[in-house]
Amino acid sequence: MGHFNINLDYNIISASENLYDDGSGNTAETKIKNSYLGIRIGAFIFGGRR
Image (tube, rainbow, N blue to C red):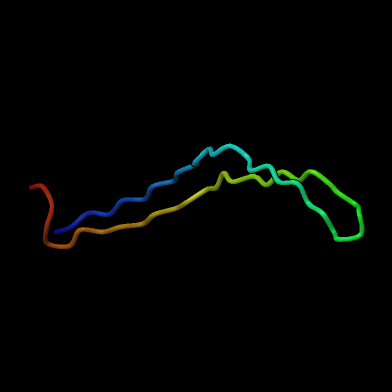
């Protein structure tokens, strides 16, 4: 009748680097991680390959 699928993806993206200044002369280098984990769930009802 139909079928379901579940995908688990881990996307590896390099970190972003930024130089932070608070306005009073203090600076710091920051790194932000951009990698993320995603889950996709789908279904084909009365469709797809037979």
